[in-house]
Length: 391
Image 1 (cartoon, one colour):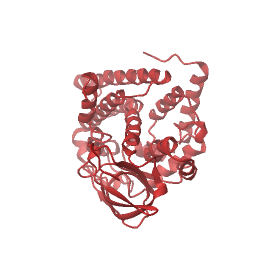
Image 2: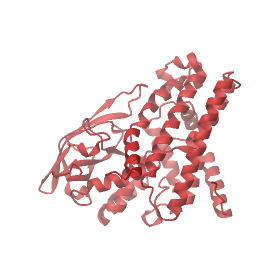
Image 3: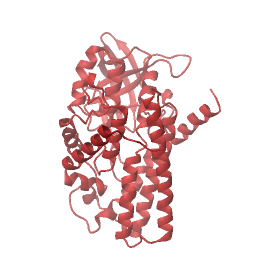
Image 4: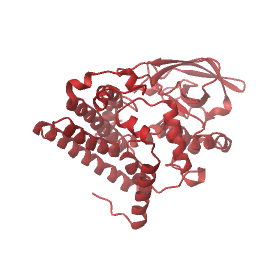
């Protein structure tokens, strides 16, 4: 299955790719290529560049200030974007909180929050997972009780990406108990500067500290920050997660990394190794299948269908391919990849072997992708229930 693009859409893809190449700072592209750690300034600065072309809010319709691209042009943009070593914009505001507020928020909430999100003036994080509620999200225990004009929130969130950078967090809280655990969950927007919030970093295997624990101790949140009605949080969460998983295939990014690996293998003197060539070819075939899956879903979307459970299939395949690519990079460099240079990873100095230095941290960091967004085991259960018509 392939795309037979009308001339106007072909011109758009060419324009988007050219603009991105012209505006991506070389030093930032190098950090991404070498798997160095990005700072908040790196990410926010690049998002500011995208704002100038109104391509930060790339998926937003025109009525809420976005570029109003068709699904086809959005797909073409993502493909051009993934072909470059550009940072993936922070999704928690622009692709999660923003669409939720647009779909479920009041006109007042939309006027208050959407412009700041669209213009990259606020940095967001996501408060879903808890120590006892990860993939089983309905088991959350963070509670919010109504007290006059406020909700008072107490509990703990975990694995909260970039909470230490964030201005706002959207959280699922339990406002009531029901016969089913999905009942009584509500969706709140919380200012991270509120008294009673404590953020504690979690250092992962690669030495990064992008994850955090967030403790909420009697945090007062204005009731006007409730999105939807009390008890509608589960429906909102499902809306958000479905669209999050749909964007997690990363096919264009994986296609770029596969090309980089072939270059790296030539540079490392193992480009002609038959076992490595076979291995990369097998990944290439799986990547082709993933790209065809994306096109099938695009065609369904153009006809008005929702991603549905197919988003789970994309999430599984895309994240597994990303992990396999990171393992292949590790094996290409072999013992050279064992060097762990914190100064280089943090951009504080050079290293004798820059390409190899990021291979091991990259492989370690990507252990997370088959867990977050709903673990791949959970996604397989979703697909099994749908296939077997199970409840």
